[in-house]
Amino acid sequence: MFKYKEKYNIAIVGATGIVGEALLNILKSRDFPINEIVAIASKRSSGSKVKYGDKLISVINIENFNFENIDFAFFSAGSEVSRKYAPIAANSGSIVIDNTSEFRYRDDIPLIVPEVNPNDIDLYQNTNIIANPNCSTIQMLVALKPIHDRFVIKSINVSTYQAVSGSGRKGINELIDQTHAYLNQQEIKSSIYPKQIAFNAIPFVDSFCENSYTREEMKMVWETQKILDKSISVNATAVRIPVLVGHSESISVETVKSINIDELLKDYNKFKGIEIIDNNSEYDFPNAYSNGQGTDNVYIGRIRKGLDNDKILNIWVVADNVRKGAALNSIQIAEAIINQT
Ligand code: A2P
Image 1 (tube, helix red, strand yellow):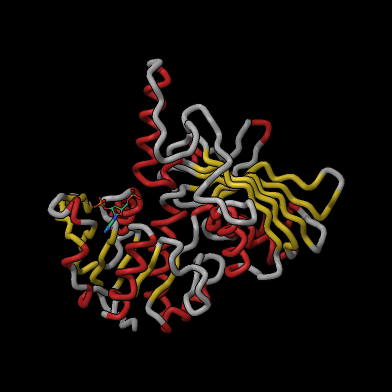
Image 2 (cartoon, rainbow, N blue to C red):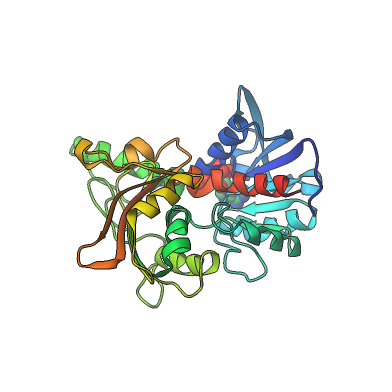
């Protein structure tokens, strides 16, 4: 149960990972009211150090950690770790904000994008756990919320162009190693991805489901229906590309009402967390390299109505998958809880 305080005790589970590192950086740069911060990972990195501002903090093995004095526990160490330890933290009184898919589809656990469904947060009081959505879903739903509010979305067709940081440090290392090997005409080894990722595009993210969609694609379906509107039909194709950080998405929506782009742009310009980059004469549009790394907004461009249908809108959406797609969104959830009181 949440108690308002001047400052909070924070645990970062998965502190040595890509998302853990971003959590530490963002908490520091946003001046999150912190009393004490604890870095937690596996036995492997016990005793190693991570950076929090100018300080180095020692990493603690999760097996030895007692969550009793922790107010907010951010989990980013994979589903298995969350399955085992998130309930322990929650039962010890911590509010768990979980970045894995472990709890996302449970009816008694809220799944939150603060710009989209902030009113659902309160449901966490059932379990002390809040789920952070999948990175691809978060940026898509921020971009679609103003469209749905004004024109009512019936269906979504989306293709993703996802950076390797979505697979953690191992994904980044595989792209760098393969690129190096390719340029030096050495043997290319794949262990994280089923095909070479360097100089390639792989239409496979996560694992295959029985219906031939991938789990990443189905996450976009399930999570859109849980967060935005259960009546929206979603068809997704998730593609991994050789970009380090920054997911891009080509999204086409069909709406109930005719689209008016001028009205939409007014709504977009008022919406916190969205930035429009859409100037064809200057070749200006969002792109992962320029807009998807180290940034906090969701960037939208290439805004076009369907060629022969007023109820279709096509957009291109870019965001930092490590920040808005994971760490930043989690911190915004914690801030929303603090600010609600
Ligand atoms: P560790 O460094 O000890 O392996 P990424 O997604 O960037 O690969 O990061 C994964 C994060 O999850 C790392 O901090 C990693 O810690 C942590 N992690 C992985 N397995 C466990 C585990 N069994 N217990 C605790 N932390 C884990």
